[in-house]
Amino acid sequence: MYAESSAQLEQVLIDNQARSEGVVVESGMRYATTTKVEVLLFVDQSVTNTLVPEPRLDRSRVVMTMELVDGRWLASQVDLP
Image (cartoon, rainbow, N blue to C red; front, side, top):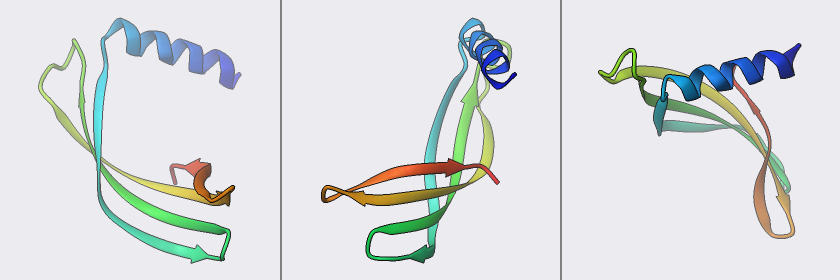
């Protein structure tokens, strides 16, 4: 079900030439260990498409879990609460 709806959504975005640009305006740490951290990101996104060419501002929250792997912090999970 998810794969099918994702494919349909992807095609709608392509057909309507959807564009989005995001900026993290604020962030905070929810918890951290020496190898894992969970952060809360507040993101402002400017969204346009062929049907609505004037930019629309969407404000989103993102919870990102990152893990230290071979000396690099990598995202292991991203959630939109």
